[in-house]
Length: 372
Image 1 (cartoon, rainbow, N blue to C red):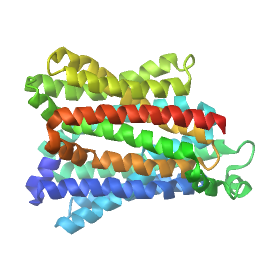
Image 2: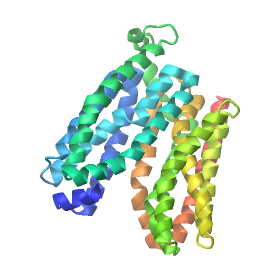
Image 3: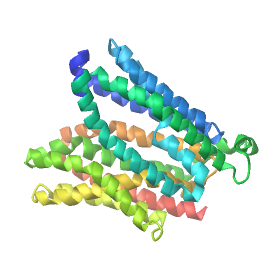
């Protein structure tokens, strides 16, 4: 869509990219607030209200007439994402289901991953049929007509399940009035900052690999068709990784699965390094990067609860979203700056170091979490 926005609005590609980064930044800033509201029992209002806000702002893009209106609407969409996408949703599910949240989160990501796979071809088709405004109007209608009521209904049911355990949902936040404040206290806990480091490392490694994959492979003289095929296969491998996790979840601990995710990312970078000499190494690269990133999106809220506890989980999860989203937003720029300094060999060496740092930080975080 960025190419169609560029052609239709006359805005520079750099301006459009900056706007998208701005949107992720607003999402990061909104996440801690959304988490605290979820802790106070307002999850249904947060998810449904954010979905409605995002749907209206998306429709507004169809009539945006300049850079500042375009940027303002994307900022609003960022706020909506901070209250309606994975992080607040998983906070609500973890709050309601506790130790049983992993399977529910897995099923949500499987459906969401399928929706994401359909989104790109649907947007392309609608653009061809209705012009660049077509996808904006259609997706806005789907959000307001389907996603908003479903989000509200599902969130109310999850909030009703919360009752920890046996307390009515509308009284739960009154029974534990200091619960949200615990999220702020945990910012002094060493495990909180270790998790912040490992989640940021995860976002940076995955973000740079995905956004710079095609130029990396071009520099290594990989056939363009093979490069595009490798990039397209990363999404399906996320789904396969999640299905594999479902098959072994009762026999493997949460800590072991998460350690395997970080190890998979490090091995993926090594495989990408080796692809310069042996293009067949793209196969393990795609499998390891896709499955590692796909499973880690499930395990982040699960291991956060395991290590830092359930009380005030929304605030804790929202605070941890800030470094994760910030690293993901900065990944394209960071990759470009490193490339300018020493080429893509230095980029891959840096990513290998970052993934090892993430693995080490998680190992220490999980150990310190069990000791306290």
